Length: 71
Image 1 (tube, rainbow, N blue to C red):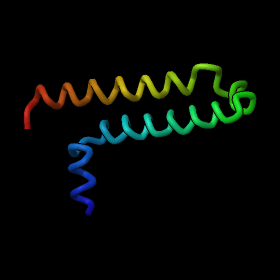
Image 2: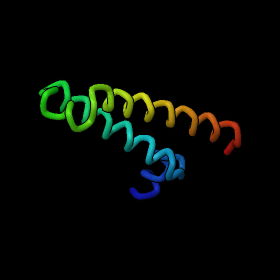
Image 3: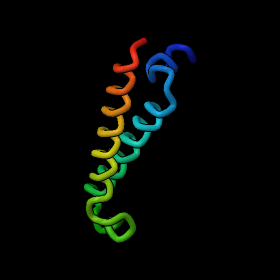
């Protein structure tokens, strides 16, 4: 099972962190949508959206670099 998890992340800690960041950003976005007044003062109005976009961008760049290097 552990090998399957590592293979899913292409044996890359940075891809794991990028996906974790996207997950955290998505959860924060859902929380802000549920009650914006609760988290807006702490995180800023666009912080969760920034986290999601940054995570997707990071994931794309890591995969593009991994594809350039080959197997």
